[in-house]
Image (cartoon, rainbow, N blue to C red; front, side, top):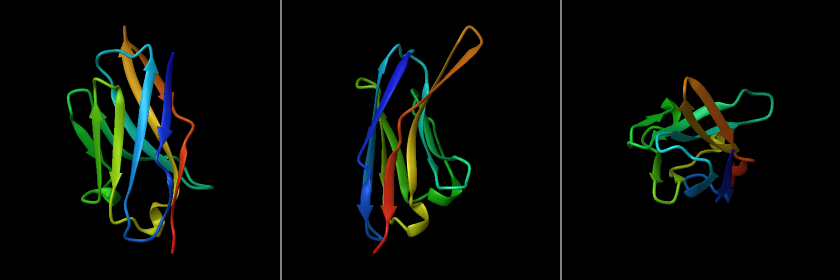
Length: 119
């Protein structure tokens, strides 16, 4: 089992910045992918960004150039630096960890952290 604990959400004005953190603990494999997803009421959860243990990243088009995902493998922690925030970035942000073993996929989620962009 894996536990994910997010932090760093809050209220920020348009154009501002926030940094989210997610610390993973438990039975973590050496190869995995961690990432951030977000969800607003009535909508499906959507990808924001992911990063593998090797450092390969993937971003949603809507956040490219504004958000940066990074990770510290020694701490099993992933970060999301969010700059130039706009109101449409308002959502609950969820940390995700995916790892595979013997053909099985294991998918873990954090509890979510609210990000609100508003003046």
